[in-house]
Length: 128
Image (tube, rainbow, N blue to C red; front, side, top):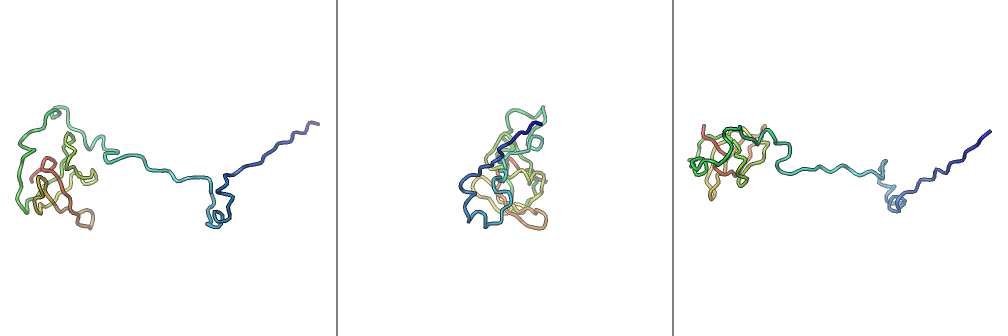
């Protein structure tokens, strides 16, 4: 008969052995929460891409377009210009121009039941 003895001693880091750490009621002490990786344009491959024929230089007309207070506009991102771009979650939403701030416009949109103010460059706006 063959008998094999295994030494299964598990060592923990010193911070876990402390009494204060055990008193927190944490069951999985040695695991860390997963961090979210990604930035502003994460998961926007389709949303912020242009059709093949419209790629290239942006039109000067769209870059310098002007709006009046109370105009209705649609948020339509121009991926070639990052300045004054809104968060991609608001892509395709409609809003009302409140006022002009420098080159950009402050507009009011409705996100579910909340009203939110965005400051957007005119190249990312389209008049309705």
